[in-house]
Image 1 (tube, rainbow, N blue to C red):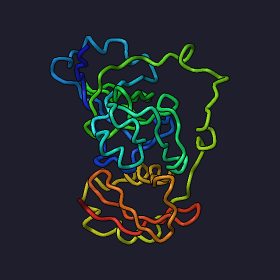
Image 2: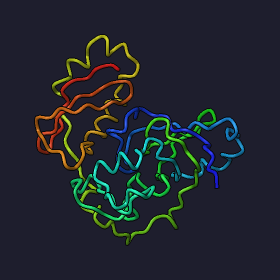
Image 3: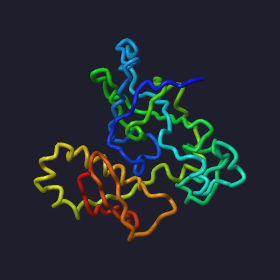
Length: 245
């Protein structure tokens, strides 16, 4: 079977670091789903605005090769395979192994992901959604409506991911408030309240690998045309600097 790319995701996530680990309905991050010419047909979207949420089926387009991943810890005895039966979820500290089919790791037999997103509107033939956990340029293979009566299960269990579902950090912007008011930011249409809200959401989810906890280490997040430098000290993210890309 040959999968055809029907659309591409477009948003501010130009680097894998900082992408939300899961799609979340609460996320303020907007993503535009831009259809390829062969699928940019109005009739194909007829009725879609009646649904509040959609499923996106997409490809891990930037996933590393097995050789690179193996150097990061995939078991040597599986190096002959094109996939690894076990992976190390970052949220478990990067040292505990779980079966690949018990995780949402990109290192899979087929690098296919799925995300539940909220549909905000149809605009000029594109879909505007929020809550996506996608890199800018991610290929979309299919779109299906989310059905609450069949896709939601009140008694569902979250396995080893249960303890991380409500994990949040406080985000402080005080050290860069004067920088954000400078004229060269005021005159840049990309620097908006929406951008600040989106970055705050990303940082609150702690984008660092689970095995890194150095309060002095400075991290850099690229989002929406800016590079944000920050440190994490205890339960607090402190934004240190903002630079235009």
